[in-house]
Image (cartoon, rainbow, N blue to C red; front, side):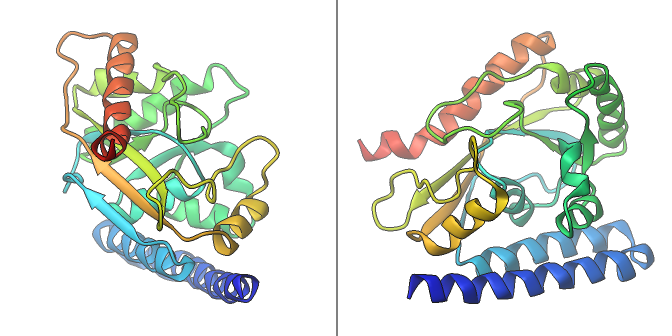
Length: 251
């Protein structure tokens, strides 16, 4: 039954993705920015429902920018969850741009791409982030730089935090968790680690035990004299507290 349910959801998810591709390709060029952003959020919420993933939002997502969101990184689902909570422009690895279908969806959603293999490319991306923030946008990054296991945070890279320092805008920490619907423990279903492919992770998500996506927004903070490295360390602590809050409440 799990396999049949997973196949049904996979088929509907593919149709929803194709629908998104047509909207981005044919309609986005005619729409204003506000309508495009609202459509991205609505599409993301619908995709979570199709995948059978309930969304729980705590705290206050930013209603408008300029603000930089920093979050822990667990899965390919993170972007979908954050878009469903509120539209933002993501910074993502350049590989995503070339993924079939998903690359078009990511680009249409306003993603900024970084080439990790080129050390100097971070400077270019920081410049574009600063421009987006100066234009009043909400930009989001995963400072760990890669996905983790959801149980321990990796160090935060400080390079992209420089955009908020230079633009003199606040940064809002965000804690993400995927928890087993029955036990409340961290779920392994959506993990995207090591040798995982997008397809294997997607199948595990669809065919495995049900889980809930939980996103908690903290309070925005300003640099207040901190350089990017010191601020990145403090932001890591803030994100860690947000994702641990529920675990500590159960103990």
